View 1 (cartoon, rainbow, N blue to C red):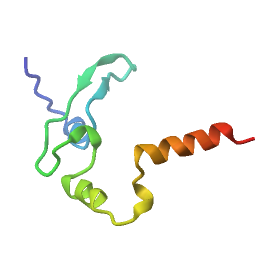
View 2 (cartoon, rainbow, N blue to C red):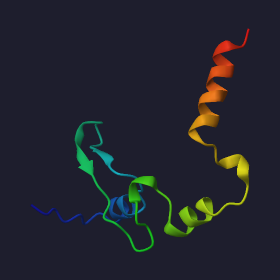
View 3 (cartoon, rainbow, N blue to C red):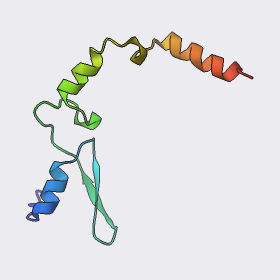
Length: 84
């Protein structure tokens, strides 16, 4: 079933959403349901809330401090656990 929203403010609020789903509540706070945004051009993974361009920028970021191997993460966690 489709529901047409005629309130332009509500349409603008829903159109601006990112993420996998958004709660829709009435003025009294009552949960009415959930809104799942449709995929948008240039945003392959709307649940992440970032554009394809931003995702590529992050993946290709030459700064090595952003990326750690699983072994590096586990070693860091062990060092924190064993610290006095």
